[in-house]
Length: 468
Image (tube, rainbow, N blue to C red; front, top):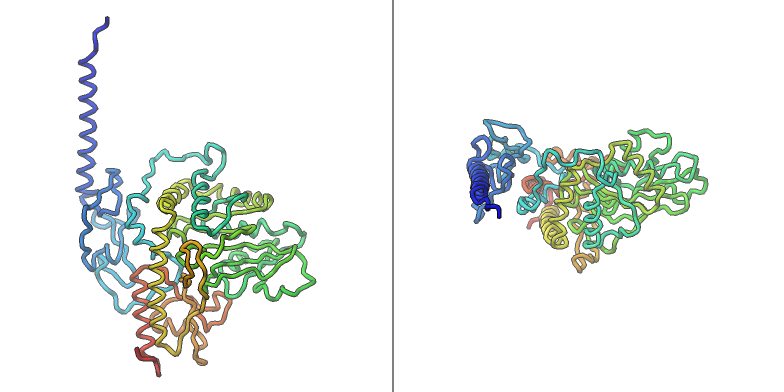
């Protein structure tokens, strides 16, 4: 019999033990010291050590620190060997502790930063560390550009939330809903007619519909404004493509299609059809429906959207547009979206939707209370909806306030708000009267607090303002 190589086994075990201890020792050292001598916080990944540190007890945040009024990112500018703080609106200084009292409240844009605290609570479970060799090919192993796992997660999420029926429908990914909207216009133009199509949207409508259609200046489609002018038309040539936004941007209404008929094609924009913003009375079951991750998880910068399409020909035309345009959504983006969805799906979306709904409810309560003292400004009225997800009738909590200036002499509401150091968007941007203005309620806590402060000051200056 051959002798057992006990000495070799011992040496091998010793070497493995040495390597393991060296790895964990370096890991611990980097975790304590941080990159470049800087100590990383518990919600930032240490890339060199590929490790996460978590405090046993949350420490009291020092008011005025970058953690309170700003954040540092790994891909941000570097100052003194560490990522520099990127400050929230109205804060400055190297650690974002300097309050800037003369700044304007930023209620412009649609950055959904109100969900940032949720993701800080789930920093570890939502983190993605990508190896250098990850998905280097143009396509997946099945020669497509769509992750089958991500597709499965999206269909599962819609089933859990009950906001869309996805069975027997094709799915496509795009760079946010923006790209998918134009892909849909392309696919529906000339579908059943040799004449150019007309794109329409009910006023007030999301400005991108018109801007994008006119920018690409296609001979196949032109933007023709409000669908009401087409409702009783009998001599139309070519197809009509109607954008239907539910909930609507800017006023939060659950819009429905105005036009019907064999030459009418509809694009349903459901970006805000989530329990953060509205009751879910029933699942959407439409021929072409578009969603985006920006208003679901808040990750607008990831640029990821998806569309469900019933008709195979429309699907093929949209797919060809997307393949020629960008050869599929970034594999890194799909990986991050998949990671985020896994966090949400784990409890059926309960935690993130309750967090989002409670946050938006508190913000709307504060806004209504502030403007209830005013005789000059009013808010849109959106009726309550039965929500099958929360299993109750609930008040809507739209992403935006659609403010109207009620005084006869106040013909331009956004100018009045700007003069009071409040940034927003005027009604004419949405093809409506400039007596209206849109204020974003989904930005950071600092942005919203400053908005309320500016509105309170503006209302207090009114003649005949109500007294609390």
